[in-house]
Image (tube, rainbow, N blue to C red; front, side, top):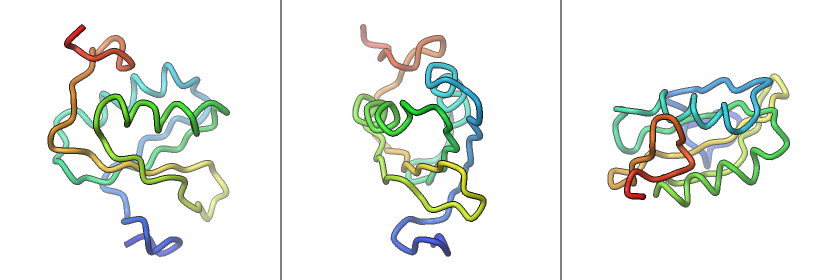
Length: 101
């Protein structure tokens, strides 16, 4: 469990997207979670103002589970998601597009 928010589990993977635009953040996120076990909780540090919209949209598109924002003791914008077993794959060079296009 996450000590700052017991409703959101502690992360298994943390992706630091500080200073990245969401396009680059999604590229990094996709790379970091590739091959991770289903159920893994991922915390994403994202300073792009579009992240609160883009991360849930990416989760919806891929089938991963968006868990919401997470309080961070350091004051960074932090979001959580849980990896789904039946997630839809995305293109490595364009993680905002599924591979079935």
